[in-house]
Length: 299
Image (cartoon, rainbow, N blue to C red; front, top):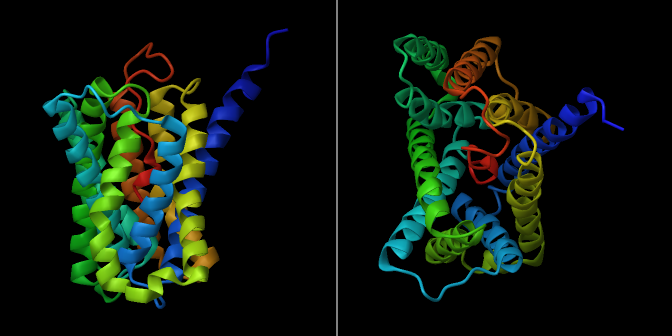
């Protein structure tokens, strides 16, 4: 018997929403520990957890690789490490929802630059309005926090571009697994220098592993299953809810409340991202085709 359409749609959409919430709850839990351990060390714990799980699942093949294969995956790993380090530095200084909103300007700009329609400039203007609204209440904004979020957004855009190049050279999830190992390795020394012996506290290690599972492993698994049947345009629209999800997670986990003006700013950026995603959608595109990379490693 043919399943009802509502059930076939609800499944993958629900998985993506679970993934989005998992990412942001993980980020909020991580921020709650910043008084005990540095953001850099927490990033390393998250990356190390995801690298171990991905390597165990993918079991990447390292032999027989060309020099270009390694250059691409090393760059992919560098963008992954930079993206995570920068966003953690950002929301250690400014509210989580605002940090993710500013970070989203990176992939949004990339989407608009890839458009062939001049009308899509309206989405740039709408996102610009959102940023201006954030600037009207500078009391919650630390300059270094804002700059770190912008750096995270730029690294996110690079991550999207490099994920496509990596996917063409590394089969399956080998590229992401190797890039995760590269990112974790690159963050090891900074993490040790910033945290010292506190990094090996059993409680910190357990919570760090939990953050890795919530922010990477669980949402990545959800999105992987969802993308088998979910059109990329729908996936992209759902991913546009990340800033709002971050703000909600911060309220629940951290009691980090935003003003009406800040919520309006988030709404502008979310609407701009949804608009840019809809404009870039290709009619008749098959599920999984040209899919956005999973957003699990972005926040």
